[in-house]
Image (cartoon, rainbow, N blue to C red):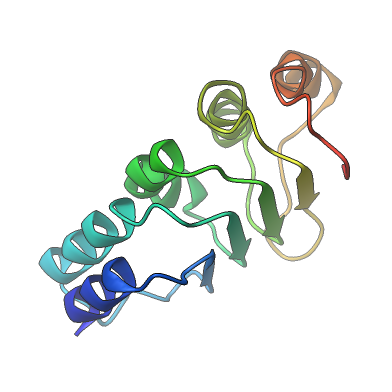
Length: 139
């Protein structure tokens, strides 16, 4: 059960990376199980790297991971082929500014089937958030 997986993840002293792959990753799980899982992940305090692949609900996942993002020193962020619209981009970059000041590496790859709605105006509004990440080494 997903809730138990979260429980064990919370208890480990070595969980440094967390990732979600595929838009249907939680389709066969109850909402209660999903909520318990993310609640437990939110209590992990060693996560440094977040990776997301092929998601069209990145905002929802980010919302569920907010406690984990606030409780950790996230140094690496990667999203690959996840749908990014204006709201998702704003939420992600606000998290960089507010909760991930130790970010060292940022990788966003929007090509593929999901695409994005990003343009110069949206990105111009997001870029100042990166100034709050003085340790950025890879972009």
